[in-house]
Length: 83
Image 1: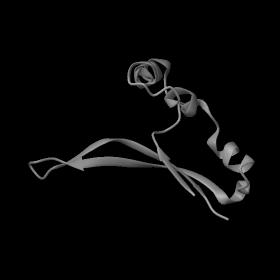
Image 2 (image 1 turned 135 degrees about the vertical axis):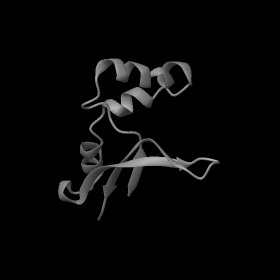
Image 3 (image 1 turned 30 degrees about the horizontal axis):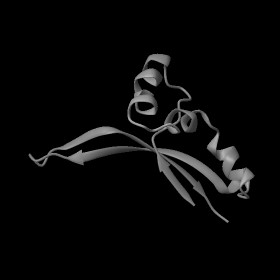
Image 4 (image 1 turned 90 degrees about the vertical axis):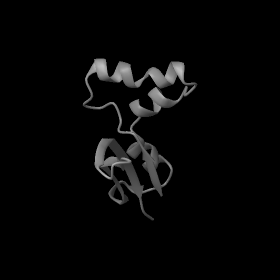
């Protein structure tokens, strides 16, 4: 199982959380904020994955501009579970 999304709010300052949460209220993403507050590792364990088989990692994201230059654009959070 791989769940790929934006990083959770843990460790993010309140102003940034508020700015990110714009999508929850203004882009019709009602689960956006609540999901980022959840402990998804615990949810994976509740779904039957063993705690030792679940890992989280953050990877940088980016895109290639029309000029051919690479630009860093943020982070992607991965929750990975194995059985």
